[in-house]
Length: 425
Picture 1 (cartoon, rainbow, N blue to C red):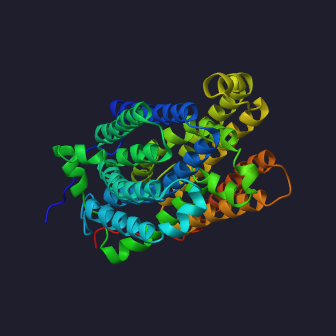
Picture 2: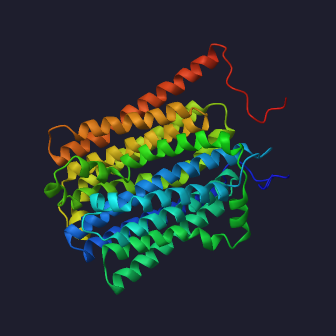
């Protein structure tokens, strides 16, 4: 059978492709800001805390499924010559239905624990949104693995625009936690519109490089690592809720909002470009260390500039736009923590592209454990938060970097890397 991917598609991103993905990620970031702004101005503080916690749970689950997208990107990119596995749609639908089903069956246990007084309808929207986002991740992996960057850009733009429209309707009709939850979950099905087009169908039909039995462990590793990543990124409020007395956590909406706002400018674009980076790493077997160092220096430089801006104008923006008072030093520290997390994400992409899945998973697990240990220290909530968000990613990045250096040292000592799966016999 002939592969489903177009053979002539270039692997290296073009200027148009980079611009399109960048624009899509920018609109996605703006959509997050607008949703947070609308919610903070239409819901009481306690209800806003519940929505932010729901959003953290939803983004934690979708963060897990981002691992599905990154591994499918690697698998489709590696399968360009001899695809042997199932289509990305079959993989995405299977994972989504399984994850949504497990969440639905256990909703009576986790919904009251995480969502407080939010009704079960919000929990149902969470389960439904997971099913939709799994297929969204599959289409993203199909676009990225075949280097169809305009298609990926359209997917990002469509999801963001649909989210803004649905959230706006809920705000006009009557703002509730369940209403906003339904709007956000509904946007996860934006991929169904693209599925009506030829590029969308081609992306969903893209084949993977391994049969299900061989693909499953790699998907498990990628999803596990992304789950740990999601705990430190979008799911951090859940860790904070588990380590903070309920009365104190109920008033944490300003801190949770500050975390989201300082992360969005770095992590949302990086999430979009992560698939592009993995595809490039897969097809670039030399000078990966130099490329990683250049990207890391750029990322840390942007983080330092962002921290300075957060210190100078962050408190004023928080007060004017969101009516919350947050200190400049805390906002600057959270921005630096976002840069550290972005660095960990980037090093993880190189580990994944290099097929170093054990170091990839181990680095993220160590980062989460370290952050959780920091949250258990006897300091105030803001101090514990900042310590956890800075220390965990740096420790995890150090572990991943060590694994990559060991692998590189083995090659220099004469131990060859494993041959490509599609190498000629």
